[in-house]
Figure 1 (cartoon, rainbow, N blue to C red):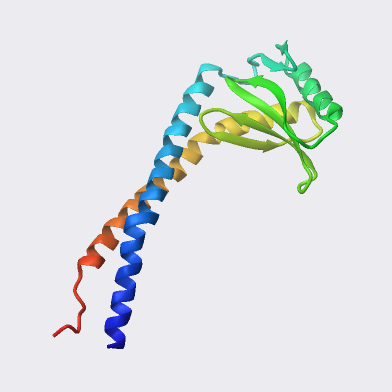
Figure 2: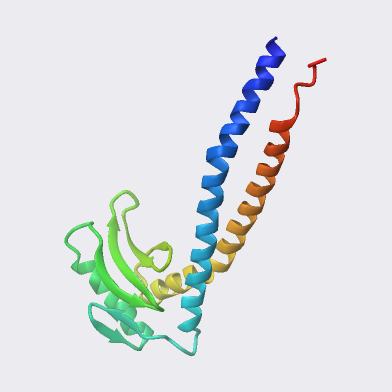
Length: 172
């Protein structure tokens, strides 16, 4: 009876995962994958490299030079009087919010696309632009990670479906 009770307990746990956990995780990962694809398309519309800086809008003004945009970000940080997020501007098709993270003791820019992305700022005017661009470059890897997690989840779900149907081995 103990082995059978354990078998039933495992079955109920798997059934619960099949009904709730797996579908929620699959839905969440599917939405993230779609979000990364959309955000990658947005970034592709505004390419940036060492020879081309796409204009950045900060505080209603457009900056076509990286150094000027970098200085404007630092000035926006200095002008903040509260840790609460404020609108910073726009870069490469993404709305930017600026906030002070009191726990990390750092300024953070949140980029709003289909998904929300966040990056910590430093004190270097060029470094902050590089951090933003590096975040955009990381979307591809994030997409691959989400796709891998989704494939794992779907495999685990198939295994669980098989296990739920398996009869108690010592039934005879």
